Length: 271
Image (tube, rainbow, N blue to C red; front, side):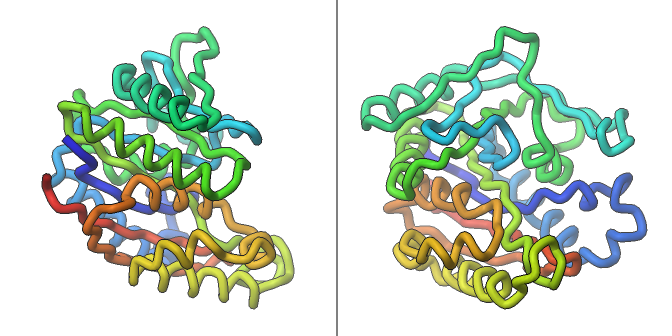
């Protein structure tokens, strides 16, 4: 098989109905887009979803791939302890990703803290809140976090993921979780809205037109001044989709609270 689903999703907890409540009306475009993404996800019939989150355990000098058997998450810190997520990991595919990365001299950690389960962060749980299927029991999740290595390493790590998926018998999806600029309005949290707006407009337009090289070579200051948390997730996604006839679709973009929320689906032809 190969990759059968690829997407970009934001992850503010306020997108969860029980948490956002009256604020949901302000992100209506995003919630509608995530429901459409969930429909695409259901149609893809994914066996294993690789999730790239900025809010897991990030190491500056290596990528992190969980090799723990179980995944569990809850929104208890947002006063919703009854919303829980429990998924098995796909250890076979996780090991293959790590093997491929190490073969290409990409620094990667096989993460296992010896505990009962890997704790899913909100960067994974918010998208899953929409993507999960009713009475889902078979979907497996491989949690991945990016690093602060260079862009070429992120792209190559994505290629290692794609190579592992290509030899895997199941249907594999990849989800890049990340909010865009956190500086769209003054004081949110830094007073540089022009930089944030320019970044978000540029990356959304480049993704819509699949200008992967342009995204790879953004100026450092351009990225830094935007105050984003999704760029590195996107770089891995670009690597995973390298060489494929991708059909990008921007399902929504908005930023009512000063943070850019982009939802995108990347259709990949069946092989």
